[in-house]
Image (cartoon, rainbow, N blue to C red):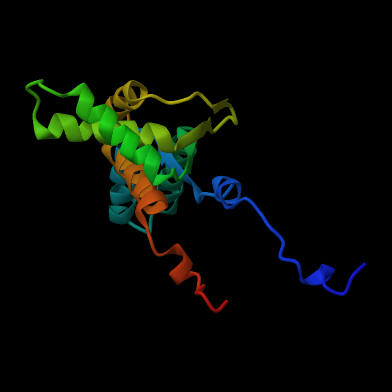
Amino acid sequence: MSETADLEPKTFDVIAFTKGRNYPEDTVTIYTDEAGAYELSKLDFKISRTNPNNPEAVETLERDREDLRERIKSSALKVHMRAVPFSVLEAIDDKVNAEFDGEQVTDEEKTERLVHSRLAAHIVSVTNASGQTDSRTWSADDIAAWDQALPRESVRKLIETMTALTFKATYFEEAGLNADF
């Protein structure tokens, strides 16, 4: 081997390298038992107003509270989400704009379709409290139907997670990484 063999630069395919990059992922837990959550808040209020000198009443209410908490836990859905490349978001924007081109729709309707389309692109899977997983390829129509069924708080959490995954441009800076690392 020549002395210069080690000095030859190595090559790589930068496009292949960046196509294989990792995107941030997160799992958010949402609950669907809105009635149970309301009942729990009423029960908590009742417990706070119960005479502490009546331990039997307090114990009964605490047992009811624990039963209700278990019921709410059984309505949990773990939504696994992954960021998508900006090119996917641009394609979604273009598709939604084309879908509504020339139609009389409100900005709210268009924005809702855009959010549903973007959420669909971010959801990888949903697992229920029993461990069953739905790994479908989500569509904007799936998300629209789900949006109507979910509590508002759950939809808000999904949108916040999507936003954190995709639109936060400072991941490297926050991790303390710079050109000198």
